[in-house]
Image (tube, rainbow, N blue to C red; front, top):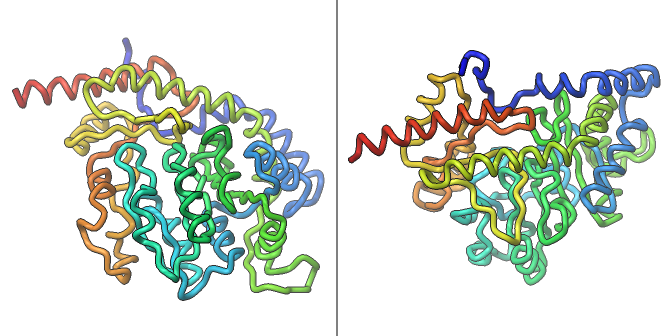
Length: 378
């Protein structure tokens, strides 16, 4: 086998995806150019409708990016200074950042060891009279335990925001994420399972009052030109990105199926030599990331890099240990499961265009490394 034809292997290959979709994307872009309407136009409205229908939500609102989606969700619920929002420390920085951005205090709860999602069994101990909401992250594309989380939220009269930025299309007990809580937030960053060719995001909700409030907030607090009833922000999804996403949405389920097939193949070949993703019967995983766990994570990553195989760490520093959140006064050891995962987890390349030959090369490289480790330690 000529390895030069297989490498380098990136984490995600957007160029190969564009080869397939180039013609319909260019046609859709030309429609926008010819329309002369580039912000809050027909393509955006159509995307909002289709994504809402796809997720099972009543309403959809296009926004500039996934971080803005989280900020707008919090603003829509009137969460501000003095309030507390419970979330996971094991996620991308934007989740905690959005809470701090509106003046609220992030309160972290450790994760489940197998799912990497927030652990409902530890949640109630973190609730105080100042707690107003829970932000649930469906990390890597795997659904969190929404049944227990929604029960806790209902008991304590808390809002639930689903950070589904990595999980469009993921189901939990027959419902797609983003339609279960009060608000769903999605990112369409280029590397996401549904990715734009730039920044883009979307919010879903089943509540008309929330929909109408976010529609104003994303557009400077206005629903009529030069009339502003709220202090909002500029977070509008432009028509070009909406047009691109309309094309990609058509292929989403096909691409998600391909991701699951790649994941099954990884697991079948690697589960006997290291820790592979667990998928409980009551949850689904759409594999935005495929993450393995091992003690010698950094050494394996270095070995893969030598063979021009990309890998990545999502995420090397939990939020409670980030310098920006030192004011929260958390310390190392506060969330041991998140801290352990941060030291052991490694994401492998996974995308719809990954070939069997490329995947076999990755698997063989990992198997060879693990065998060398075994021989060294024996």
